[in-house]
Figure 1: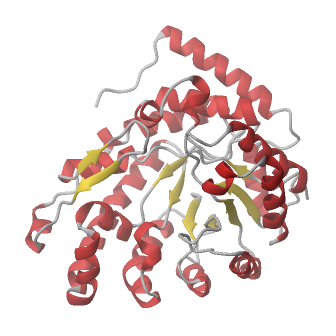
Figure 2: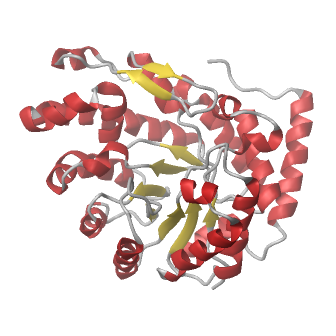
Length: 375
C-alpha cells in the first residue's frame, strides 16, 4: 500500500481546515480533550462530553467511499464536523484496516457506495484451515490509520481527545471473518476447544495490531460488541471476556470504549476482569429493541451500576429516532437521557448516523446537549 502523502495544495488546504477548526474549538472554556481528561479525573465540567459518530464527508461534498478509504478526506471531514458543530470528542478510524487484514487471509470485502463495507466470504470451512494461517504483518493495512492519527495529534495537539481506532473484540472478529456465525454457534456447543483456538488467533493478531498503532501514536480503541452481545452469560464469560480483557489490560494507559453486555449484571464482572485499567468507558447502547438497552428502565439500571462503580459511561440516541424525530422531540429525548444518570460520570454520543439523517436534527441534538448537559 502506497504511503499517504500530501501535495503542496493539499498541505495548504489542510492548514486552512485545521486553523478554522482550532478557532471553533477555542470558543468554549473547555476543549474536547480537556473534557475527556476531566471525565476520567472526576472534575466538574462545563457540559457533558459529546461525541458524534457520523460519516461527515458529505459536509465537504464527498461520499462514504471516500470517507472510508481516503484518510485525507477523513481528516477534512473531522475538521468540517468541528467547524459545523464545535465538537468532536474522538475520530473513529475506519474499519478498513480490519477488513483488509481479513481479506489478506481470504475474506471478501463487499462495498456499496451508500453503505459501510462488509465481508461476505468466511475463511474457515474446516478446522484444519486454521493451521494454515500465519498472522500477517499489519503495517501495510494500518498505514492510513497511522497517517490520520499522527496528523490529528500533530495539528491539534491536546485540543482533541486521542484519535480512536476501530477494534473488534476477538470473538466478534472470529464471527465476522473466520467462521460463519451459524457454524460458530454450533461449534460453541460441539467443539468449544476449536472456538478457543480461533479466539486465540484473533487475540494474537489484534495484540500485534494494537502494538503497531500505539508505538507511533497514542490512540484510543472503539470495541463494539457485535456477535458478543447475543451470547449467554456463561458463553460470554468463556469466549468473550478473557480475550477482550487481555487486549484491554495489555495497554492500561490507552482509552478503550466497550459496549454494554447483553446482561447488565455482567458489567461489575467485566470491571473485575479489567481491574487494572483506568481508562475504560462503557458504551450504553442506544434505546432500541435490537440493542442491550431496550427501554428507560434498563437505562436507569445501567446508569446506577456505572455510578456505583464510579466509572465513566456513555449514553446514546438511536439513529432511527434521530432521523425520524422533529427537533422538539429530540430535545425531549435528550432531557430524558441526561436525567437518567449522573452527569459527573456521563458522556453523550450519537448512534452511527447514516447519510439520510437531516443536519438540522443533528444541530438540535448538539444544542440540546449543550443546553441541558451543563454541570
